[in-house]
Length: 179
Image (cartoon, rainbow, N blue to C red; front, top):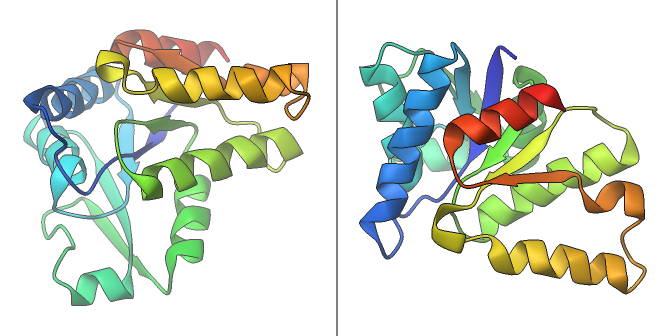
């Protein structure tokens, strides 16, 4: 595994534990010699994880839509910054650049990106592992909802376990590598 796309919030969240989780994920990526691919922003958890990977000497590729660059949200110090037309192009390029996907805490955009990668896996568009770092139970409700979807007959048994969930970055990277 050479690179992982990390989806996460453009905000910091309500607790400093989220920033620390982003820094811990950055440390794990660098320790495992895995490059970060992310949304290219300099705000929220996105900025925290990118800054920490760079500070530790790791590689960071950002993919950001032109509209967000114009709002001055692009990170200026990345290893590589790709400016794309729109969010669809961003997600496709992030998928191409990555060997796996991890969601840290975030908002609706994070969930949308996470579920697109899960759906692509389900449909056989890619065979890359998808995980979530469950910081302080952040994703407990989502994990329970996916189980509910399965119980109600909307998620097939072979797809119910596509989302790999761990509380610690090293454990999550190990699960992605083993998938």
